[in-house]
Image (cartoon, rainbow, N blue to C red; front, top):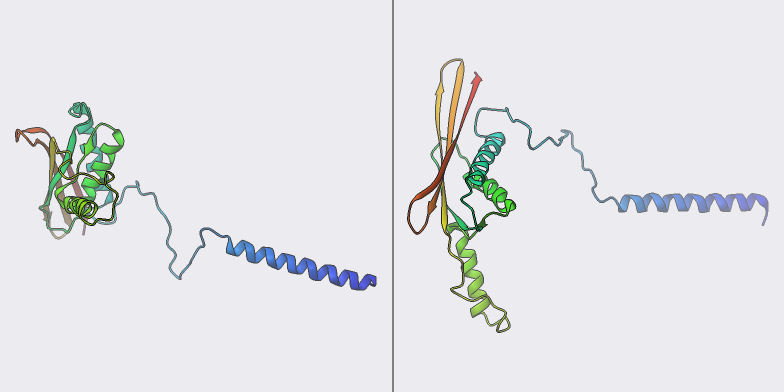
Length: 205
């Protein structure tokens, strides 16, 4: 083989290797980026949101932090008692998913390790369905199924309410929110703890 042929062959091998590596790199991208004409940027989820004076993420975070901090400071959760979430009423004129507020409070309390949550009214049907599937379907080994009648009852019930007052004129809009949270002793029916968070948001029209 002549020197010229050797050089041409080496060049072909190098080109093939380079193309193979490039293809492999493209295929191994774990997070490919898809771009459109309008680019979207990630922001800080904890940043103060001031797009409008309607209920927003910052309001949710402030409420959750205030309620969680107040509950943990009381010392009412000695011995990791069981709690269930009862009702969370939205009495504002806006559509607000109050479940998000309670989920944030519940998550923080569970992570604290000082309280145990049992299924809420809204979650109970899924638990009943699972018990029936294990005990009535005939699909599971005897002795491995969860027994009916062994659920742990809640010692405390948590109830919340979100209200608002809106005032506006030709130049200004003022929105006042108040979130109230109560902790009831289920057996005695007494309020063992209660707190509220007030938020006022004003904007020029």
